Image: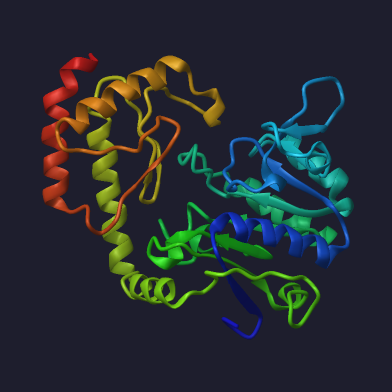
Length: 317
């Protein structure tokens, strides 16, 4: 128990945290259908690997890959993130929804932060008894100690986190309102357990990490991330949207979803990856991935990065 009104449960991973949060929402509401949004990352459980179905059937979904049962995708509605049209659909179906699962700042589009959309989503789900789940597997602790909930002043019913809560060790967490969490065993009948859930090594690493998360730390991290984003953007044609310490270096502007990234943007990123690797700088291995900064990325590392960028920038004119 974290406070008098909230509880948390540790899991093996962020993916398991999301999977169990959906199970919890369905049990607490007695409903089956959930809403997710295009472009979001929720791990690799079957229950979130759905996409809009090809065809004329409105709101129909299908698995994103072979091996995922079609009946699993039928309980998922996939909508565009941040639009009035999506809010209208959710409002019209709200009383049959178990949960709306949202990555409040999508890791594949960190510059898009639709706060008013999230506030309206909170109002709709609160009125209908639908569980609002903030998936902070990626965004958690990277801009604010209370994640997007703290940064935007919006309280979700359930939140999920990944290995960041263990300082990078294998662990996950879901937590929420005490009444919703009360359906989890041993208080309730929703079962969840894992061999590595809350293991002492990950817990020690997580506690050591959280002791560093002071207001001064976040102020420095924000300033540092802005410098790194600016350094990235000295590379001709590269754009670097960010959210806190989360950066997405990409040779394409205005991307709303990772599946909208063009092939030439990825090809150029691959050239950049190889060029910077030769300068001692290791970027994320794919142009579809985001980069993260930490306290280890200080002024000496930034200076080295700027030198590396200057050495290769002419090859991207």
